[in-house]
Image 1: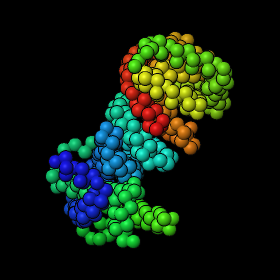
Image 2 (image 1 turned 120 degrees about the vertical axis):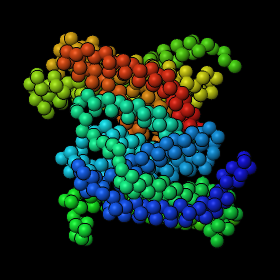
Image 3 (image 1 turned 30 degrees about the vertical axis):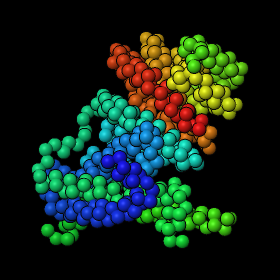
Image 4 (image 1 turned 180 degrees about the vertical axis):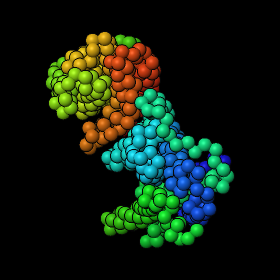
Length: 242
Length: 56
Length: 227
């Protein structure tokens, strides 16, 4: 098991395996997302209260779930990198940040576009939207810290500390925002409640599609990170076919 | 249901299509930027190797 | 090879930091002046009417205090980093989390405490009733403490980084939002004449959390920056 682990972590092996795996993530992702889009836009019945407007749900909720999941993966990878000094784990954290930030952006933008017809305003200081916004700030801070430290090893370790501090704070931020929100206004939150199965499956298809998509993009970015960190000239020369 | 009905989306077209369009755009952009990052890393590595070769 | 006891080492470091800080007097006074000036801007921008000021007073006092304390945060380790003292501290054999805690506390004494002391003045100028003063002081006492212990992590991470001060705000501000929510809420409740104990307790919980976890994260951050 450990031998396999070390082999995977060695740059040449990882680079090759990642290259082989990308299509296995990418194509199913594309299929699942297309099926989810078709199901969500065409097959799913309109909501009895929100009509067709509720269909934004099919991009909003999967994006929001991904934004949090990617932060969780990023922080876990950062912890592994800090504890076992594993370069590959740091690379996973570094490669995840921009993808997670974009998912967060999508969740915010679609939430705003959903809020306009439902709440009558582009931006409601709703607990979930607000904590999503703070999550975006955390991602941006992480990316800014990384990009302002030149030495890659120091950038890895510094941003890992930040990611861990952020992940401890995330639940605190979330619950404090919920508490603050419940004091200031009545519950205007949209509650999807119990959804029927024909309404639910396109969302699940989208979510799994997004997960596989994240895997595919992550592996492309990881290959870039591996090359950037690699100092083993012989392998690089062979790989780049010089 | 006609195609026009589909695009009209029960009056929510102005919110729904931008939301879906934006997400699709971001998904495409992420793939593109990741691939560009990989190509750039490869180019930078090749340049580094060539410089090392000329030096030695 | 611990030759000096924890308490003694901490005391020495604390008194040294204070003496150094008072030698650079403007670093102590600047955040306070900033605090006073920012809170003066609000009546000018909104209205001099007492009732209206009282409505926004809690938020204004808290945001202004947070920004003023943030202004000073950057200097927590800066000069020690530049003259090599920090390296000596890392190598001193004392646990780094303890030294980080002491340094954060010393920094709070010269940057956070003055804000707490001047806060009643500021609050009074914003038409906060006298009955709410205790809450203003108590909430800011905890709040500036949270900012110092949490901010120390950010200050440690941004050592020797280009454009460090902007980056530092970017890193620390999202983390302090829970404190802002509870602190401003406590003050607001006190102004309305309610019992502010609830949000104050939560603020206290946040303070304990940042006091206990912050120094460990700070020492990790300092180790990374010293490599």
